[in-house]
Image 1 (cartoon, one colour):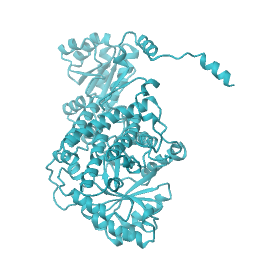
Image 2 (cartoon, rainbow, N blue to C red):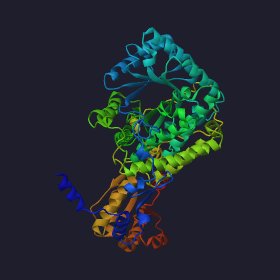
Image 3 (cartoon, one colour):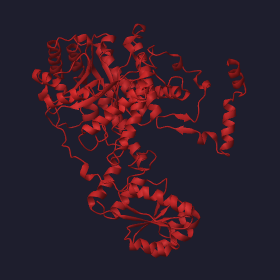
Amino acid sequence: MANEKERLFTAFPPVSTEDWIAKITADLKGVPFEKKMFWHTTEGFDVRAFYRREDLKDLKTPTVMPAEYPYVRSTRMDNEWLVRQDIDVKDLKAANEKALDVLGKGVTSLGFKLKRDQVSAEGIATLLRGIEPEAVELNFTCCHRVIEQFIPLYIDYLKSCGVNLANCRGSFNYDAFKKQLVKGMPNAQWIDQAKNLMEAVKPLPQYRVLNVNAYVLNNAGAYITQELGYALAWGAEYLDKLTDTGYSVPEVASRIKFNFGIGANYFMELAKFRAARWLWAEIVGAYGDQYKNETAKIHQHARTSEWNQTIYDAYVNLLRSQTETMSAALAGVDSITVLPFDKPYKESDDFSERIARNQQLLLMEESHFDKVVDPGAGSYYIEELTNRIAEQAWGIFLGVNDEGGFTAAAEAGSVQKVVNASNIKRHQAMGTRKEILLGTNQFPNFNEVVADKIEIREKAACCEGHDCDATIEKLNFDRGASDFEALRLSTERSGKQPKVFMLTIGNLAMRLARSQFSGNFFACAGYKIIDNLGFETVQTGVDAAMEAKADIVVLCSSDDEYEQFAPEAFEYLNGRAQFVVAGNPACTDMLKEKGIKHFCHVRSNVLEMLREFNQTLGVN
């Protein structure tokens, strides 16, 4: 059998990279290989169409084993992650009942968000009644002004339960840079606060208290390398400033928790988490070879992105969050939170929360993602992405160091400026559909209305008890879909739904393709689409449009036929409705000279064009 296999493989001689490129170039029929076979990423580097074994020869990452420094493959020898569900505590007893319920449904990590007046010995006892602290990870978020009060009360509660504190694990969500990044306010006291918390948490060796909440950068539209680069600088700031006050490197590193977002770029997100393990280990290891061990292991929690979530066609959020969860799970993070699909527009209910839990459980129990450590290892593509993302993120990290560290950068607003610029750039990409959100700016559900399902939420008051007047630029958390949603909601709430009539004529294939494209184009604003099988003459098509009381008439034909049909249709319509040509024909300049202004095609700015039509048609 072995000889047969050997003969089989020798029948297929190896093909060199040069031979592959020559074949691809021939198939491209003269188009340069570099033009068509490279992907120019928003992360600042190019990705080739294919990679081969030779591309790994100068990379160190494929030679590292799992649980081996610098931990690019994994910090452990298994891939079991914790399934986390967060609970916004409005009523302590109800939150406790909910926690006990979900613990029986696959949850292995709980997150509680507490109000100031709930922080008391009685409140903690009520919240945690019946929960075994040694069996489940417990994570707490509360106002920074009371977190120092909360920790000793929590420790007293654990002692009263008779548990071994060394076996309890979890976190207290102290974020030294929330004020600067989210509220636009300086936080000069963060080092003193962090020191107090480090002292308070000493009886709990497996609890982390210094949080790098990089997911806020993700939710603000940061690119992958920006999220990672700034996260590394953020964590290094904790390490630098607190070791300067006398704490050892292991004491500080063991208290840092990285909370990352997960974006929609499947393989890049997977590579991001691998690069994060690697680079953080290098940062810690730079303090001395004696720390190139357990001390250098990063603790990564991941949560699906809010940037990608949409109000329209909200069930598509499930598809986005599922691939995001897959990226994080395959990358070997320590725990994952899947946000419910209805989070952008209402308080999540039992159904959406159950689905969110099950998204992780399916990956564990049916797809067995927890059974293989770092399955992406050795993949030429993923190894290359890991290295390129690491290079770009490291450059950002060094840039923050040059500014004087993360505190200086955040308080100067430079981090916020960069991320907000990315937010603007990504919104522009949404407007031109270079970045796609299915169901929002591409292939919308024509008949969907959502205004009635949106729950209005009151803006939360500042927990410090005073007005949060920003003195620093804040992060902008407008989701990717927000502009299109505002546009479509304007249509819904105006009580007027413009009618768009497809005047299809001429070449059958082209008119059908362009009517479908134009229908999706105008449905992004919630307009009513009236499609047709085709007309024999321009006049009959325009007459049918007027009979249908169309507000917009879209001429759908081939480029060659527009030179005749477009002027004819425009003149016969005579201003009775807005006129649009579907496409970008060679005769565009000539058509513009005749007074035709509107053309919809793949290079159009969909958002700006639809905003213009809303204004023209009185949709406010």
